Length: 88
Length: 242
Image (cartoon, rainbow over all chains, first blue to last red; front, top):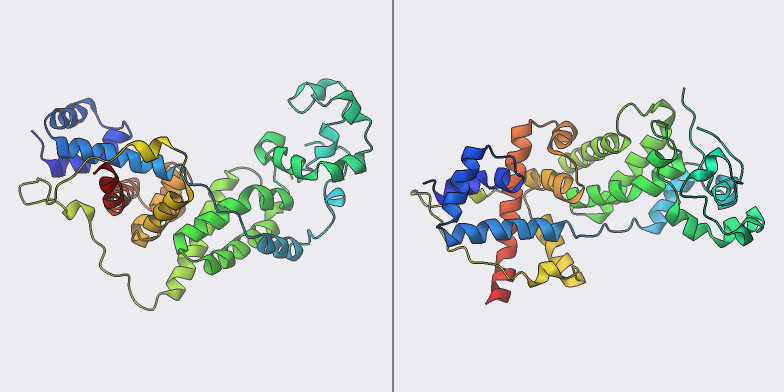
């Protein structure tokens, strides 16, 4: 049976479902008999679920305004987006 | 040369039926179509901003306008820089540098490669350059999460289960702040890959391209980042589970 350390090494491949079948079996055999590694694997996936819920921080409006001015876009909305077609 | 796109948002709510009128933007009520265009553009600017088509939706393969770059990509550039540098002021500097550079070079962009990947690459480069400039001493000794095992391969310290509760809820402000802090505390070597993979959603191959790393190096750093983050957050969740 593989050690806990080896399981930890294989965990990324296991979670990402990239492990070849034989290695996957080794991981599952180990998990069937090691509560600590089950806790490790479970919490590893919890971390992924948590970080994927993080929301992006809004760009400071004053930074965007300064950038638009610097880029020459400090024009009214209706001028920037004229109501006539411009096909691709 | 491909021409820059027009956002053309006002027209999409008032265009009469026709070949182009079959898309998802053609469901405006008749009453709305009688509203003067200029007035409607002022009234619904915020809503239109929210519902505006993305560069890819509008015209796949074409160069975006500067306004589209600001609207769609500024948040990604800013958040990547902020998380790589863990400093808002430096993140603003990088965001300015990158976006103005991109806007100046838009006419050379031919849509041959993903604009997002290109932006990530120059943002990462700018952030790494700034980090090198700021570094007065090398990063402290990086602890390897794979060292938390005994010689016989067993766990050096007990690993306990985590409470599932917080994951099933919407991430609250306090928990978000705590996770952001834990991410910021990762060694930069691991954090860069982690942010691109698990926060920005890039594929490992793209991350290798952006950071000029081999695929095994990307995977190794990503795995160590996740294990380090799990280790940093463990006390919080183990306490909850009692």
